[in-house]
View (cartoon, rainbow, N blue to C red):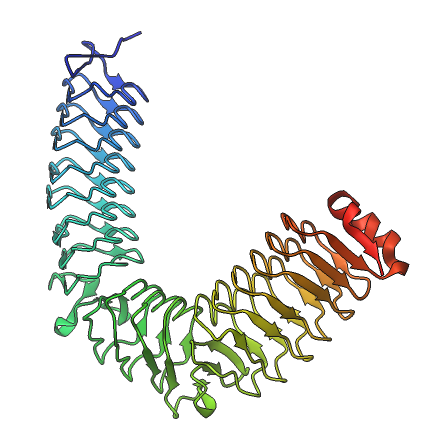
Length: 491
């Protein structure tokens, strides 16, 4: 078996070795320099990972692939020279190489792997070879010193989140051969002010200097930034198109738009107003989730949606379902359901008022509403779906009304401030983990016999008493003996 060792700070790689095995030099603090001979063809996973004093690497001309995490967390690494046979720079291979300032990718490289240079915070320059076809997801995530990026003309695929949290990135040019672009490409790129698509690209364009990437065939805006001006020709806004664009303070959606994809403006924390034009007929979930919007307006001539009575919400006019809300929403009478992710992550009032017409609250409708403290469900509500109020960390008081029939899985999971709970007689079924991780919950009272799923009160560490009608004690003890037998008390 080949012996790998470090002498005077230099990695000793035996003659005729073709593969450097996994973990060969892992955590070697004395290693300062690596010169990989031309006999080596592949470098294994974690082969040089966390060698914190490694400063220089020269990769031989026979190496075709660098394994996963091969040089990750080499935080002193300043120089890497790639050989001329390299095809794949593996997933996370240079993750957290915080001193690396420049990389020169040879013509032989075809793929830059998932997170390959993620969190290389000093990386300023990427010099591309002529052979790269794919840049995988999060390849340059959190490279906070990158200012300018030109995607070469050889590239056809650009993955999701490739430039996620590149806080200094100002300009991106998309090459002429790019055919696929993943979502969240520019999330949290707060300094980005210029997006240009090569004029000969047949799939995407940046028409009229709009500072966005638009699918030419479908007229769908797939990625924008804080200074994007949406052209009048755009017909739809793709999912996550502006997600996590904290530099976005205002946006005008043109009259040509008829569809807005899921989470299109989510996490745009400085966006305060959104106006939905007259032709929009399709709005997917969570388009303004986790934002601080104070105004939501639907054009009065829109036939699919409305914001009746100045309610600061988007309501499906046909189904009377409130699909998007904001911090100033007043839920009007006539609304029959609150849709998926309608208020997720929104700073709503401490106590929200529900109309008497409300029948159902859909999954994740109020998930992570950290400002919500009290809810009273009207007697019209029959269903609270999965995770509807999950992770509402300040929710203390919950009145479930008198008509509720079903409480969905994790409906109130992780509501860590909830202390007491009364399950009304109307409830027929409580799904799995409905109140799991409610760490302050100390007392639960059932008014009638109710079927319960598994782990309904899982890890409710303060729970001291589950009160049930005396006539149903034997049934509850049978159903819940293993998890809560000793807590069940008659009243």
